[in-house]
Length: 171
Image (cartoon, rainbow, N blue to C red):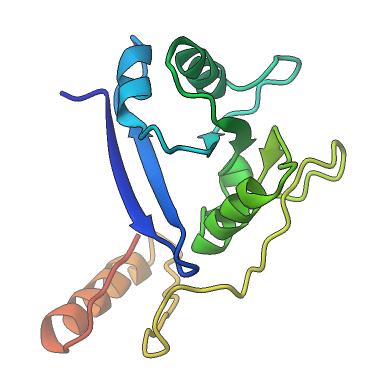
């Protein structure tokens, strides 16, 4: 199994951006991380889903800083936390992170998705930003549990998916 996988693409502004997904965290393979990033890498945001109060950074961030120090790459690197308080990670938040990286002095050790008014580390984002087409329809089905509504909602979603041209996703 590979330790990490990469994907790159052009964002809506014609800038080349990418994602490095660490698939195997321990033992951390610093060499593979350094090799997976192109030499043209200018800035990196390392996202962790944990908050380590009192530390110099979150675990993955610290390991990535070390990996890049050992490689020949010297990009700007910042760390951030996402998904705290079980907040969903949205495209609007991803855009805010890329916008932060494009800033000449990006915010380091930021949080995204929550309002961290105690330490002031939150990145602002536009919750109305969307990458979905205008013809996408979203619906929320509520199930209370133990009264049959969860099963009924599951059946409703299956009917929509199997008997219409719509694609469905439920969780």
